[in-house]
Length: 321
Image (cartoon, rainbow, N blue to C red; front, side, top):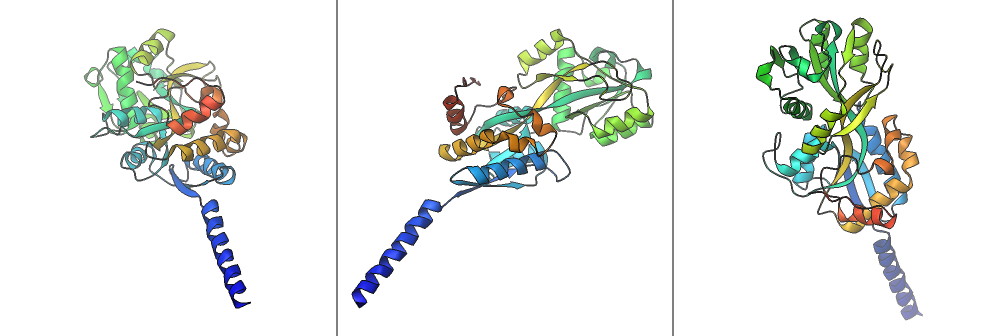
């Protein structure tokens, strides 16, 4: 009888061990942004559906310091996934602009939604095209930021550079709008999903314009910098601007360390897209996340696990050089 009890106890222990192995999950983190921004709620929504629907993956959204900081985490293998802008991912992979060295391990899961390049101008400055910035007082974004990098790209295509301006300030978008209110700037550059609260505030008290870009300019821009996409800011988004504005945009995207196992990224990608309707309910911008635009402005190659999912549902995998 004693032997039988020992055998039964041994079988129970073995079964428990095997059950623990079968139920073991891979824990991953998603670097997002500040709690008051867009990345944090969307990253939290993605983490939630992955944790509930991916069989072997548990995901957690963590606050972060947005694109540059998040890509440094990915590049140094300090986090598995991150929300970033696609232009910043492009620079990270190349080791240019705000990155001292290249991070060849940055891989894509998907691009998510557009973040529009707003070139906002005081109406009295008579700035109708980007070429009209010559001789004006402008703000181009904080030094070394993705916003400033985008502005350099646009000015390059326009054949302009900072010395062509009367004055160039390097300010984040809140300070840019404040300087415009005070009459110290003619134009400013803001990269964000519309509507931007700071621009809405400016437009309620001042006459402003948004600069529109023609197809010829956008074609030249996209040829050299393929991370840009075309976006339209609808008429009426900002007070006093009663016509659609065509503008270049970058894409928010989710990236992953190339070292994360293929199966983990496959399950992550599948869970996210199979339940994207739940993610879309987390934020207004999340409603723009669709499979139809998952490769728009893709700046780095897809991770093999993500590519496996897209092939499975019949999508053609883009070639990224």
